[in-house]
Amino acid sequence: MKVNVIGAGLAGTEASYQLAKRGFEVYLYDIKPEKFTEAHSDKNFAELVCSNSLKSAELTNACGLLKYEMGLLDSLFIKSAKANSLPAGTALAVDREGFAKFITDEIMHNPNIHFITKEVTEFDISEPTIIATGPLTTSKLSKFLETILGDNYLYFYDAVAPIVTLDSIDLNKAFIADRYNKGEGDYINCGLNKEEYYSFVNELVNAQSVILKSFEKGDVFEGCMPVEIMAKRDVNALRFGPMKPVGIVHPVTNQKYYAVLQLRRDNLNNTLYNMVGFQTNLTFPEQKRVFSLIPGLENAEYVRYGVMHRNTFINAPALINEYYQLKEHPNIFIAGQLSGVEGYVESASSGLMCGINMAKYLENKNLIDFTSKTAIGSLPNYISKANIKNFQPMNANYGIIDSIALDTRDKKVIRNEIASRAIQIIKDNLNNI
Ligand SMILES: Cc1cc2nc3c(=O)[nH]c(=O)nc-3n(C[C@H](O)[C@H](O)[C@H](O)COP(=O)(O)OP(=O)(O)OC[C@H]3O[C@@H](n4cnc5c(N)ncnc54)[C@H](O)[C@@H]3O)c2cc1C
Image (tube, rainbow, N blue to C red; front, side, top):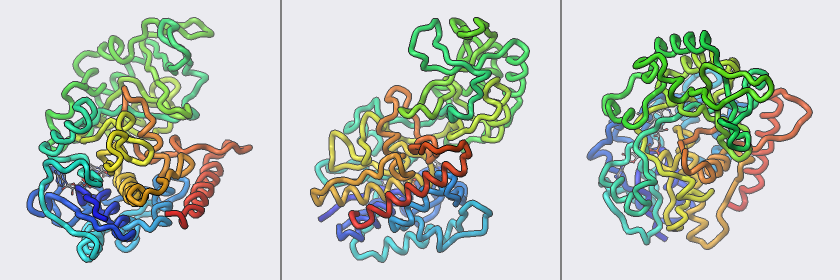
């Protein structure tokens, strides 16, 4: 049986490999090496466009667990990473050229995979297809995708506010309350007095920002301004904007504040909170340093820092299910960054799941959901069930993996237990995939 895979990046090559080893005939398309997107320049597939780090290799880090699970599932991405690893402490770093070449050789020599170099601008939506064209999907294909998905459901840049874990917010300082008491305790509030506000703004406007790539300039800030730029334009802009204090009163002390940062619940399990209106382009260490000046966030743990960059992605909760499968067109799966996951490893993991589940779909068998008890299952479960109105991409983190009730608050102990459970779930399913 024939399957089309569009995009030979991290997700598309993994999906192709998984389908080919299950006996499917894969037609894999990429504009490379004839043309390149703004971020790609290597003729090989699976190009790491920026850092050569695949993040932590430790099981107490969700990305480490994700890689371990992918290894159990015979991931081509992991095979190549292991064959091309470089010493990098507890992280897994790779020789980027060797990494991409290993994957390209495997794809080009696989008798079940037929590679076609071509910019796909449209395709037959009745054929089984995995779309994996990534954050820089070309504009012609994006236009075509809008005709299938609806033009309100495809986005072209990220303007992401940071997300922190609930148990890292100091609730002796921060408090639960709704503006004008309208709501059901959906917000956590961090109140600042006048002095705290101005010292926070002073640090914010002098903090270091990420330097945007040339193709991103002018594009990403359209429609959504970072808090540091807002504060640079007017020292009071935040307290009349995202830190507006009106209608917010401490429920116990009745205290009012000069400025308030609100955090909104971000997941069904109520473990993660989103800093409302705090889109930012500061570097990650600067976000940690400057936002720790906000009372209640001194020791906040960031599962996702704020970012602003070019990124084509779909509104996953509106369009796909927990198998990365389009609800309206079950013969089409969306893999990689385009699906709403964020990061190299996460993109490859979604390609792996799309490959496995496209095979299941075409064989008329039950699709596989590893559930939110595993790292690989937590990503599609999170993105397909997130808030449609505020959807932003997500990376692997323990905040979206189901926790375990233990008689300890020691994070390492808890995470090791969660990881053991996840690994067992994957092992129990190996005969079924
Ligand atoms: C500039 C930049 C830097 C990044 N840095 C990092 C980082 O350091 N760490 C990290 O974890 N993540 C990073 N990311 C995010 C993300 O992890 C990577 O973009 C990752 O490569 C996404 O994998 P993917 O398979 O979804 O897409 P890609 O790996 O980009 O693969 C998509 C493929 O589709 C092809 N393609 C696009 N349009 C078409 C078309 N119309 N027809 C045919 N082929 C097409 C492209 O040529 C490409 O080969 C970065 C993203 C960007 C844009």
